[in-house]
Image (cartoon, rainbow, N blue to C red; front, side, top):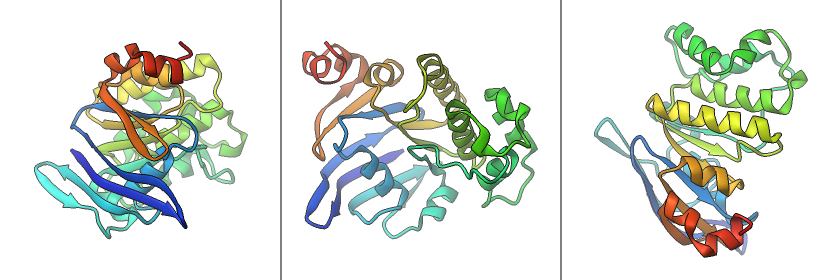
Length: 235
């Protein structure tokens, strides 16, 4: 569904992502893990078109292949590639309802079923529908950020550190919801520092180190790797 070839991202003389290749198949959960500064967020931003990059990014939807070179971020959303940013980035001065509606800004059709689906996944958002999003807890803001992305009907969802700053109980809930979204047909590329949880729910994984892919393979195999255990799982 997503094929990335020779992706490079530079900030001045610093090469944050150094010619990486990877793919995401339709229906999968694929995770990128690595330490801070490994290039994970830069990779997602490049895929979303938020920062300049070189290399090839191809998205295949319903048998139609799209080369994303030069395509604006909003048009990538229209194709079905949607990112949930690190740090939630909700619009704090707007209500929960308005944040959700902003997620559907490209759409002109009826949003009723999509709102109902978001409320089914996140009942607390329905309870706080008219509340300013700045007054929500961190976990509720993360739910809102994911719900807002779902309102655009993504085909592939890029999740950047969804568990960051959350209590362990909420982390488990967020990962459960990620699996539920995937079960409904949304392909997921997950960037996550909680390598244990990410490898637990993903089918495949790529380990980024200083802008390069150091390891890749089935997630369960990487979870058993002594190298990965020592570096990311506390083994």
